[in-house]
Amino acid sequence: MSVGNGSTEAEELGRLLTRDGLQLAVMESCSGGQLADRLTSLPGCGAYFVGGVVAYDTVVKNAMGVPGEVVEEFG
Image (cartoon, rainbow, N blue to C red; front, side, top):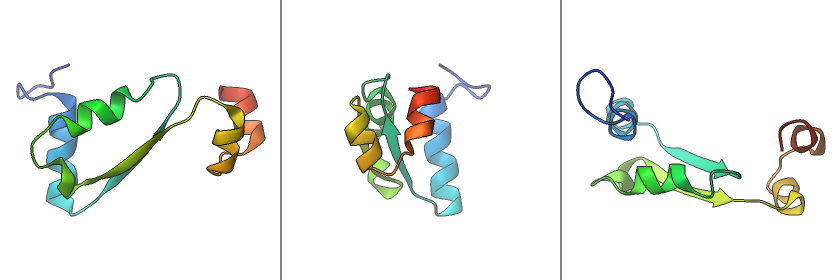
């Protein structure tokens, strides 16, 4: 998807993270890792992308610190 200036959302996020000296880690479930895939497809992403976890099973989500009630409500 493109944002107003012609760059993709992932490119714009990377630009903002780099500008502000921030880093990002993600935990995905139903997306199957699509967010991490988009972020890591960009040159220089190592400057801001720390890593990600794709967790489908509730046991894994709980082990990563997601409370059971959050998993129950949102999956």
